[in-house]
Image 1: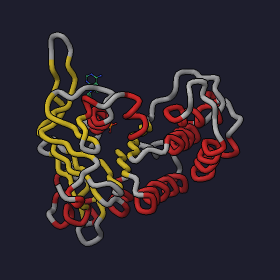
Image 2: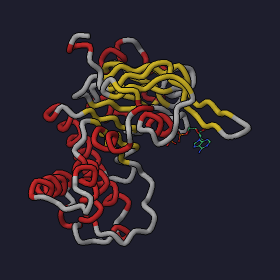
Image 3: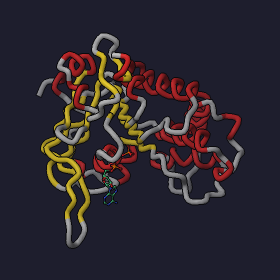
Length: 265
Ligand SMILES: Nc1ncnc2c1ncn2[C@@H]1O[C@H](COP(=O)(O)OP(=O)(O)OP(=O)(O)O)[C@@H](O)[C@H]1O
């Protein structure tokens, strides 16, 4: 295999969903993805289509129903949890169980896969932690208890923790759901910069569709009829955005490269 064909993430014939003793509920199937490192990907799709299910499956939070997932050419099933923590960090939107940890302690926990068994933080660890506070504009919250944070502040703190984990892949499930416009754009810019400057692979599920269209190198589009992945410009060219929302209220305006309200057509 040549260097050019090396994929940080490769997914073939993946089926995702939920399995109980009596019943299997397939949310999506026949998903295929080939992703090179250094790209920012936005996963788009309407509510309930399966974006979180896909991200949880790719990060081994829940098992796949079928198919294969390779991360850096290793089958996800054979990657240990410690190995995975050095490769991939995950930012979820759920609130933490009531935690009396301070923000500093929570963010420092991102270094756990790299510290010794008593969690001793070296000077290098401290530098990485402080850089993460700077990048996410959360330094002033360092001594705040996590349960005292607003949803938006917590979201930025969780991104800071992912940054301290310093992994080649960062997966974020709706990272800007609670952020104001300023922090939403700041977060997207930060993530874009991590991809382009530091060769990180960033995978974001989001409802910020128009922002994603402007910033993402690649899109993963999930709709009831199909899943497509590829370069943003190519997907626009191929009219793939037209199927994203089965709504008469909005349509994809190819000239503006944005979704627009239908009556302004
Ligand atoms: N634990 C579960 N057991 C069974 N079904 C589930 C479970 N969690 C979610 N689902 C179902 O899976 C489907 C996809 O849900 P998912 O949360 O992945 O969608 P989503 O695209 O992330 O939605 P949203 O944009 O609203 O966050 C939904 O129909 C949901 O009801």
